[in-house]
Image 1 (cartoon, rainbow over the protein chains, first blue to last red):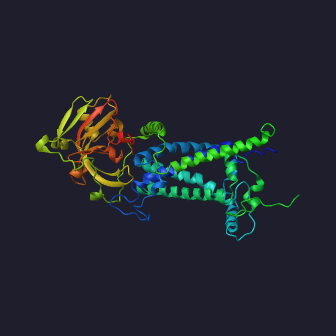
Image 2: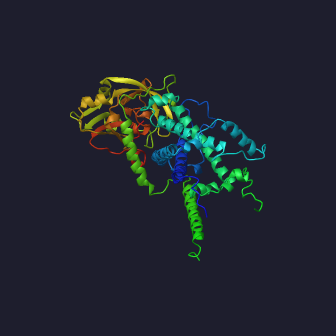
Image 3: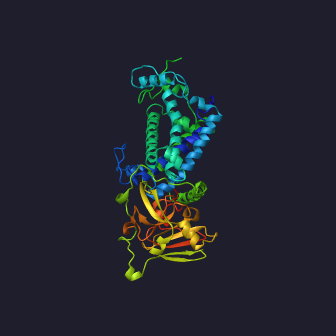
Length: 238
Length: 246
């Protein structure tokens, strides 16, 4: 039995799952905070850019129980998330793994080829490295979304003490809007991520827990689209 | 069996470990829905609130000002009114005598001011944002004297580190750190949008400052007490953040 190095270093695996818990709690408590005033308009004004003013998030998607509880969780978990994100980014930078994640020339074309493959306009899975071009784009975007969340979050936490930052984002009302929009984008990308794990590459669950991975089971080797070729390809006998 | 095939033992244990791990994770995620979180987390949350207070105090500057969103109209009558009593608290002069604002505690010259006396102290009119804990904002112009002027008149001791603001709204009160209380935009307001403060918004006088969330800005003021230690507050004692700085 040959021993392969783990697909993901233990630091990446640990920070991934800490991240999962922290994001779930941050989004849930954030939704509960939003529900205390599920609108963006200043009192006595209207807001241009949100068609569901006054409509709250379903309670089962929220966390914290009540406004004070949700705020306490939100302001506690933000440090866990920030610290965890710093550990992950420092690790990825120091190990040089950021090269697997930042966009390169040709990634746009590769991403388009992946879309063509997923929509059955291309028969064979495009060649890829550790991640396909769509994954790379997503994993590269996530730290940027995190940065937007941190800046807009600071702007609505301290609109007086950090008033230049709040003004830069268009004022308190807009900073709150950007914070919410960045959250929705994060939730959308996370939902797609989880869907793709189960529908295309369930073997990556093992890679992200114990680290083990069999290259013969990669989506590229299986020519896997969502819900197709989940099982390994049958190979002719040697 | 296991000793004969050691390599088969590991994956099974791993599978068991993963199964248990997945169950725990699912429990954690499902248990999260619309819940307050585990009871044992209470200590963690208290600890983080204390740490956050340290960060908020470090960020605090007397020179950081709220600009009051120029270019926007005053919120005026759209400003929600709020009190904890079952009815709008109104000071009953026939039963309680003339309203007075008492300034006491660690001061050299305790004060007891009638409204006319309070209005004779130099006042400002400041157009500022109101930040509610619920997430909404409003813009109002508050007229009143700066608390820092009142503190100077009363001769506050340098040992006073906290201020408790008390009201006749069923015992509603909130205590503040002295730095926020002495911020130049912290006023004892008796005018709102160019009129005398109405009963719905805290008449005869209330505390107002954009550097704290709405619930820290005590209405229906009766007493300002300078203290060596914090004295909690109505919402702070019920789980809301005590510092609540903006």
